[in-house]
Length: 316
Image 1 (cartoon, rainbow, N blue to C red):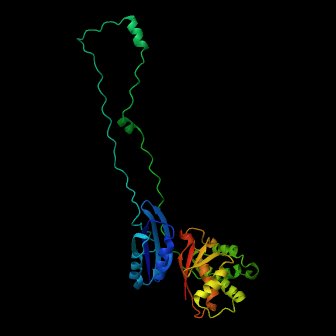
Image 2 (image 1 turned 180 degrees about the vertical axis):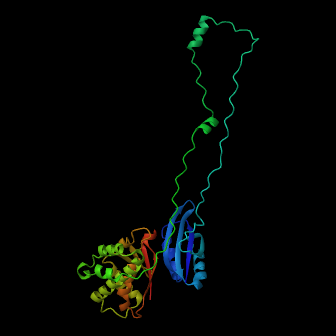
Image 3 (image 1 turned 45 degrees about the vertical axis):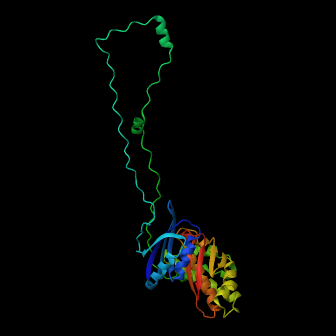
């Protein structure tokens, strides 16, 4: 297995995560994390995926054929290291230095040998006094440039914190049992229990614990409502079982064989995905109903990583 980072530049932001995530999932790669940022050049996408080393060339060819992307780079991802985006606008400060102010002109000195000017008459003195006096000399542009303080530098966006991958821990079965102890009485109002479960376990055990909780809830729903629906094909099971079951506590829709989950309360925080619960829920619900008794769920994109919605690709 290999982890790759996809860095891409596109003109439009809407739907970019979904489209690139679908290309990665179609070529056998699983999404690990993703980030979108806006830049004067366009929309910058960074996505880290995991998959077989032998499928790297197929992924590159798929990205080359994506009309949405202006350019992209595909490179190995290094754990704990944040790579600068290749298309990000570089911050270059101007080297302009204003010219120095011109030297002041020397004051005129009256000639010694010059004859004194005749005294003006009283009428002329009155006229001169009444005439408007010239305004004081204003500063030249060069003097204003030198004396005026330089404008403050434009605010810059803080650099993103480097991603640090947490060690993966086993699911906290005791916490799952406690959270679902009153499942029969509280279903489908289980989101408060799931949010408390999410916050109560160690960070490294979050994904596995939410997936286990999803498997338990999905298996319970199948036994209660769909136990007679067996031997189904995947497409039929998704439309007849998965979408109606998800509607009990989530806004879900089936599009092109993928499940779109909108406004997921479990995926509200930045980089804090709860899609593992939905994947586990589908496993517990659909595996007993499928003819092949096998299921794989791949998160294509997630709301917590900047996508408009969570998208799950499901295959048997």
